[in-house]
Image (tube, rainbow, N blue to C red; front, side):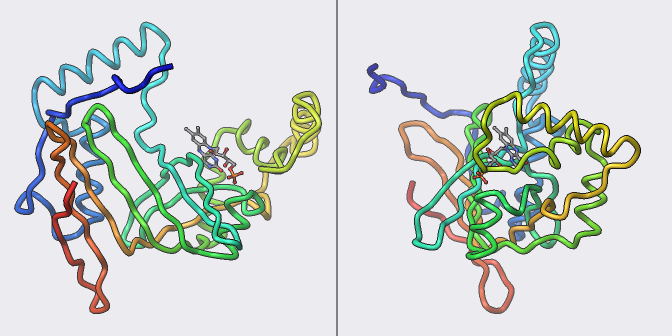
Length: 234
Ligand SMILES: Cc1cc2nc3c(=O)[nH]c(=O)nc-3n(C[C@H](O)[C@H](O)[C@H](O)COP(=O)(O)O)c2cc1C
């Protein structure tokens, strides 16, 4: 397989200091809304998104997971792992996601709270990279989110010992069915399941530009609580 000719030239947009919010979380929210198509900048993009939605509905394609992000953690010896998780909220505290606290990521984050996130929105030719430290969300907040999930997903959270070996698919499904009976009425929050919030220390916004001369701006949290903003070389 020869991938040397897989090459895109990026022409969708540009980024300059004047167009960026002083607060990177506000900037993120603005880019996120644009990625969903909610606040499409141009008429052509709105039309493109409408056509994409129609194509998705007709072809039974799933819409792109705009809130999917790559989460990086490190183990005790400093070896990194990545996986995709879904962003479930952004607020003044940072970036929220939910998972099994006994999973590989859950154990790694308990031992070392340093983590990083990457979002890639190809149709906007944008990337956002975030680094910081995580903390567990209060159980009451995890419970509120857990109860908003469909019944099947709530049962799956109980059925899956996430990241542990399982003999076969049948064992997993049998466990799920068993739990359907156990929790015929209410499905409580599993004790090892809940949210994390990643408090950002650095956030970088990347906009693809022609000829690989991309625009990059990084925000770094300073000791006085202010965000320092710098243009970075691509
Ligand atoms: C699009 C997508 C979204 C996912 N969202 C989550 C999520 O929100 N939480 C989660 O625990 N796992 C999620 N997963 C599964 C994880 O990528 C991963 O397989 C799982 O969490 C176990 O990771 P670990 O063994 O590194 O802890 C998602 C996977 C994909 C592809």
